[in-house]
Length: 66
Image 1 (spheres, rainbow, N blue to C red):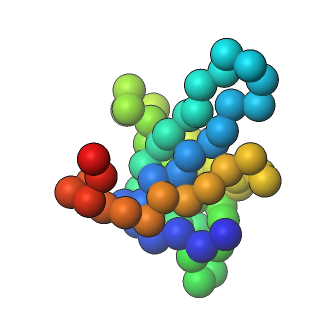
Image 2: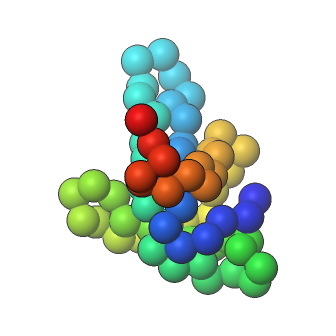
């Protein structure tokens, strides 16, 4: 998994009724875009994540999203 600052990290819900969790990557702490990442949720909460196999990186910039 490779990411850059500004990418979005999407953690898919693993049970029925659980929505995807989307956070913004604000800092890449690993080498060459690898985890861990410092991320920020919509409510402003920041944490450090090492995403698992249920996560994907959305490389599109906010202006590219529909």
